[in-house]
Amino acid sequence: MLREKMNQSGLIGDADFRWRGGDVSRIEALSDAVFAIAIALLVVSLEVPRTFEELMGIMHGFVAFAVTLTAIVAIWYVHYIYFRRFGFEDGITIMLNTALLFVVLFYIYPLKFLATLLITYLLLNRGLGLDVVVDISMQNAQWPTLMIVYSSGFVAVFLIFMLLYLHAWRRREALELNEIEQVLTRGSIYGYGIMVAI
Image (tube, rainbow, N blue to C red; front, side):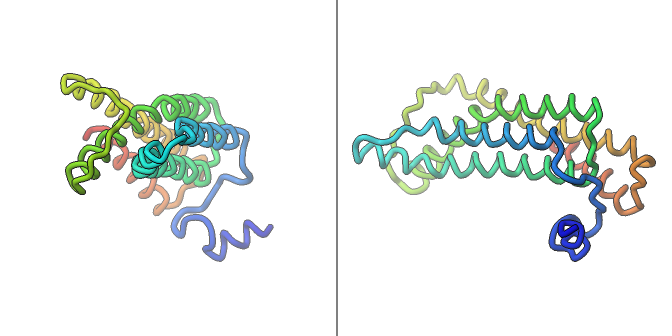
């Protein structure tokens, strides 16, 4: 009742999209748990420092942690909006959602690895002139493979979102999407398709 009033008053939801998802479903609860585990994996990889030098090394890693956390929360938010807008709990949605959760758990380490390398090397060392030592070993010949791994995760995440929105588009009549909702749904399909193509 309160949630419905908040939605009608514009405090939650989309101004141009009627939310069809009601209470949090089991699919969403599982997904939220997996996103929480992914974030926990980022934190668990940080050891408690025993010396000041170790503390400073961890402090330098916080920027990469923040970038990685922001990327995971952005993926979670897109997921959240999808389930609020459409509220699907069918087999296709479960299959695509499971694939997304798998990719998120896999993607977390390459994302953090790349963020740590780029931020430490480009921002801290080259940009700010600091001499930050990273406990990561990588040779120049390995960069193409790292970028392929990272790009594969990026493509997989947004391909799955494109397929989820395509599934909603195919069910637009059953969902009774109005004209604006149809435009937004098509726009999401095209937008995620462009992200996959890039």
